[in-house]
Length: 232
View 1 (tube, rainbow, N blue to C red):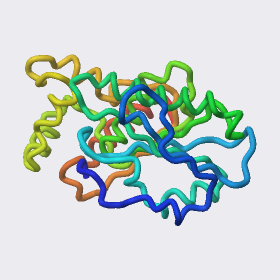
View 2 (view 1 turned 120 degrees about the vertical axis):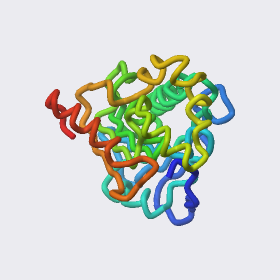
View 3 (view 1 turned 90 degrees about the vertical axis):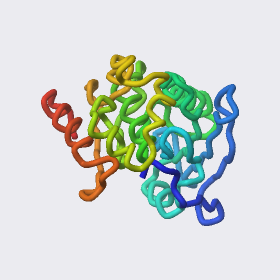
View 4 (view 1 turned 30 degrees about the horizontal axis):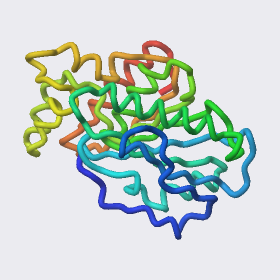
């Protein structure tokens, strides 16, 4: 599931005010597609979708219309963002999420939606980024909830490395973090959402038979948040 999804967004199947390929930052992958519900006002909240792909692949168009349309019907705006692929410093992906939020806030009046009312939803690697940003990097409190679909939470877990290596994916961790865990264990801890606990309600969705991102990854953070009486 860390690999890129085979789904593809079909804008023609989405009933919304659509703004494709909005540039929110200086890098080539700093673009997002925006879907605004036809009936909206300044209280309309935003669901930001962060794609999977092992931090090295995937695209904003991986989200199917069947997932986007229900959010629109429930009155949410939806954003599907691209972000920089892994380049040795996970802070770059965190910066991209922050810039996407800043761009949205800057256009909130024009788009007739709320500011600083975001729910982050990410799949696999995107789930990891959503959790990490919400619990460790959201200094303004813009994120009000986060949903992780099979997102890794503990990058210090050696069993997780073995599972990834079984699928020939062991290379992605040094590519994301710039080093091996043996040479720099601290950066692996710093990039692990499980070690953070801001008061952001968090939903973890895992498959019981997933042998790449096992349910234990989500349960570990779920248990940690509950210790701090954070809704999960």
